[in-house]
Image (cartoon, rainbow, N blue to C red; front, side):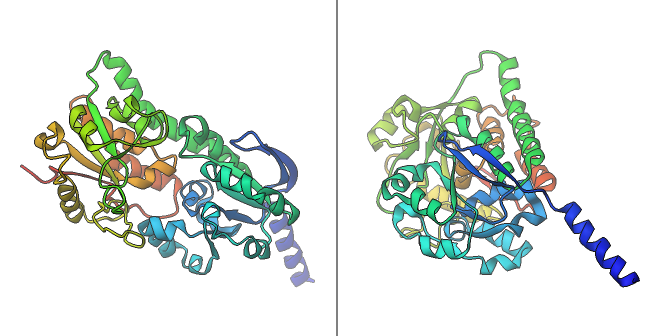
Amino acid sequence: MRILRKALLALAAVAFAAAPVTAAEITDVTGRKIELDLPAKRILLGEARQIHIAAALKRESVFDTIVGWRDDLIKKDPDSYAGYLERFPEIEKLPRFGYIPSGDFSLEAAIALKPDVLTLNLEAEEAVEESGFIEKAAAAGIAVVYLDFRVDPAKNSEKSIRILGQLFGAETRADEFIEYRRAQIAVVSERLAKAGAVDRPTVFIERSPGITGETACCRTFGPANFGEMVEKAGGHNIGSDVFTTTFGDLNPEQLVVANPEHVIVTGSNWSAESDLNQFVSVGRGADPAAARERLKGLMQRPAFASLEAVRAGRVYAAWHQFYGAPYEFVPIQQFAKWFHPDLFADIDPDRTFREFHEKFLPVAYRPGYFVSLTDGEK
């Protein structure tokens, strides 16, 4: 009788702890309304790098409802993948999928995992719509939800965090994440506003140089994404003078004429897919000396030798993956410190990101997300 009572109590505790599942309607970043049971029991991440948000919402239980993910984390951000693998060794066996616009996503394999929902990035929308993928997925009982942390993050990042909060049953946690993010951005924006008419140095931010030989120079950002981060940090993004799109290619002559006061390149560990291997490997636990040597090498390209930023040593690298996660408060703080060192002398972006890990993430913090050409010089 005592054993039976204990068993009943255990079952009651589980039932009480389990989040109630209710039919609901959510609206994704395209405005589509999707009906599904929430929280979702089986989630397929159409981009594995969405783990940077999901983990902040669910911490140690983040993989409890993830049944598969795209293969991009291990290819494009293996240092972060290693951190999650160290904490959650079982993810080595988590099924991986390709990218729908590239044609290497298997719907049949996805259906076999019986997910309730598949999350996709907004930039996949055109290919998905043209292929009739949503209708095919719906016929198999899979809801498709679009998120966006890249194309128009100012408009869609908070909305996307809240959508993930609904899917994972972590709405309160999503609100806390958003509140923290806003507060850290305000550290910079409020101080700039209080300072009044500060000089805004011109900045060229180069997208992933050295990863491939296809473009030697000079892919950059328009007014969104990293371009917006530059502006929020008190700089002027020269790409915004030329492009209204998220990305665009300056020619070397345009860069020389613009002669920016600061140069920032984005980098990551792309060793799994680079055909050039001249990228700056920054990110979790990166070697700063090796990153600095790569950065120095990139500044030897013909378009850069005469730039004021290079002559003055105002050249930096930032983790490329900030462009796809709502962690932009970290580069905004770091950029502000580079652009206005006196105004932001007391700001410590490394401390901010470490604190964020401790408050929100289940993986340990490792520095290495930024490097400066003059780091270590006396």
